[in-house]
Image (cartoon, rainbow, N blue to C red; front, side, top):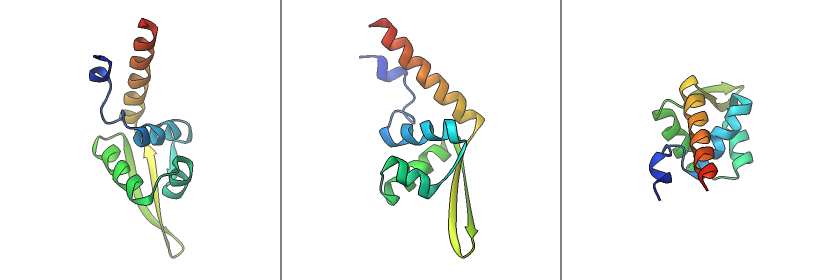
Amino acid sequence: MTMFKDLDPVLHSQLRLAVMSLLITEKTASFVFLKEKTRSTAGNLSVQLEKLAEAGYIAIEKSFKGKKPLTTATITKTGIRAFEEYVERLRQYIDRQ
C-alpha cells in the first residue's frame, strides 16, 4: 500500500497524532493536560514531544509555576501546515476507496 509512503512519518504515530490533534484546537497545552488526555506515560509522552519539537511542529517551553516545573507545548505554523496536509492526504486516500 503506497498510502503510508505519502503520510508524514512524524505524524503517523498514534501518540504524536493525538498530541497534534489536541494542539490544533488548544494551541497551547501543559504536559500534564496532554498526559491526561492521551493517557500516556510521562516517559513516552516526553520522547514523542521531543520528536515533534525536532520536526518544528511544536515549541516546548519549560518554566516554573510557583516551585513546580511547568512544561507547555505550543503548535507552530509549520505544525499546523503539516497536520492539515496529513489530514488531507488521509481524505484523498479514503476518497479513492
